[in-house]
Image (cartoon, rainbow over the protein chains, first blue to last red):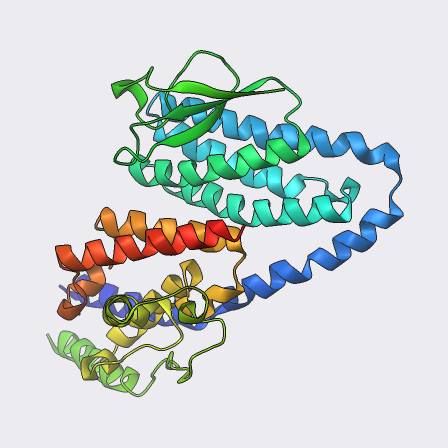
Length: 199
Length: 154
């Protein structure tokens, strides 16, 4: 009993402490994201064309995290999907924006801002594969556009599953021609078809 | 036994003392130019649902019932609001990129459809925030059409 009361008191203190620290930090994230555009622009001008190859190199890292995630979902593996999500966050952070032109940087930042959040949700929701897949659906759209803009550096297939999301359908990117459905997983592994081939 | 009484007494004093420490209120009092209602069309019936069931944690204007000032509940509520606003803030919806606005609307559809939102720890006390099946449909259809209108502007 005594322990319980003491425990409650401690909990109250902790709650109070948590609440007071770092209040409303997130409120400014949107404006922060906008302000990052400017340094990128100025940096891009200082850099010579020789660094161009690095941009494609780190897109490969983002893509490789995405494909790992896709394969994990096809096997209904929420833990591996979460790990791949965290891998993608790292890849976004280490992505070298310096080599991008102003227009490219604008497109990249727009996509990354959204895609990173989906990767974060997938990364922190191991155990809730349904929620992870909802974010994977939105993430796939972002990564498709990223590949369309910057090139994936490898052959890719843009696949479509007509059944997911109450028949609204969903798309995903794959490195193999064979269908391995990441939305329905083992219950419907071969549902879907190749919509587009990307080089 | 004497020691036990002392502890109870101390806790009681702490409990009374913390009633006087109230977290800052989440009440901006004005409609921001970045409010969702100024970003996408929001019909009156949808606006009503959003106000009752969502805005307490997802906007800059929380409605505080009397019991929300009882500590440590007020801290709990403040932390709910902080987390809620970090994920989605209807008052600052217009600050997001078009792409992100679409993602958030899709997120609303998913969360409402899955019955994840409004969160159960909130509806446990705020019973009026519970969505009926009809309200869910209204909300989902609205979010879907708002998302479509945004993707047309792409």
